Amino acid sequence: MENYEVMKQILDEIKANDKIIISRHFRPDGDAIGSTKGLQRILKLTFPQKDIRLINEDYSDYLAFLGGEDAQQDDEFYKDALVIMIDTGTIDRSSNKKVELAKKIIKIDHHIDDKPYGDISWVEELRSSACEMIAHFYLTFKDELKIDSEAANYIYLGMVTDSGRFKYRDTSAETLRNAAAMLDFGFDTESMYAHLDLEDIKNLRYKSFVLSNIKLTENGVAYIYITKRIQKKFGITTEQASNAVSYLQSIKGSLLWLAFIDGPDGKIRVRLRSRFVTVQELATNYRGGGHACASGATLLKKSEIKLLLKDADARIKDYKDNNEGWI
Ligand code: AMP
Image (tube, rainbow, N blue to C red; front, side):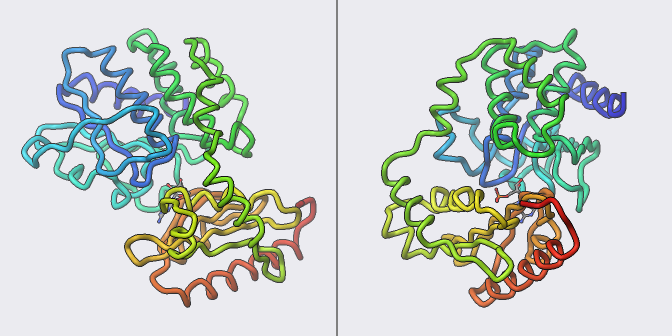
């Protein structure tokens, strides 16, 4: 099996350490939270004598229904700890700024491996989610590891969200087999989807605003810029405002769509999504990165919006001129 050796090394490290700290990327999504909470639960069930903590410094309101995490500790606490970073492409994207103080770091991730880190690194860029990797890890060593419906639910949730409800291209037959294996442990998917999909009326009014204000470049790049003023007008958080990107996804002929969101730090967050074409390279040109069809970037000033749009439009023109079969 292709990655068996590295997974075995990870299991051996887990067995050899009594203090394990699990962390993820900042601005967490369902996959970041599901994979870390899922692994923490599996390890706690399997090794009740070990100290296994999930420590981060920022959280998601939208996913608060999944429950809390552990408190940050002083620097000393890290010195004899093993850190497992999940779903975090580069170490500077860690939500926990103390992870580099640890004795050893293990990286488990499915982002494009631009800046490798960690003493042990298990990266599979074609996996639909980090949660899928945790499901695969569990299933590979299921004779030695324990799981329950709570852990399986965390993992399943991240698989569902990061694969766009199993719709994105990297959803493989194995993804579905791994998901099915999690479902075998039994949990309430109706309640899970209700938590994920229902929105309050304030958000729906905001969605209606976004849909009415979508802009298109000459070659079909859809975009919207959500200023601080708009966020204030709708009484929504920056996290809620950032959902704008998902409202732009179903326009025919628009292969790439972008949401620009004013952040509290004065910078502009860019969320980039695409079908058929790749956005990762574009994101990398603007202090970002991520996956082929879902990336993020950061702009330092408003004038960069124009530059990025020009760049995106040229790429789409080139793609459309040279390819067939896109919609
Ligand atoms: P987002 O639009 O922030 O949800 O990001 C989409 C994907 O790209 C997620 O998997 C992020 O972890 C990743 N990503 C976002 N911003 C960056 C960045 N600046 N550098 C590398 N990866 C990023």
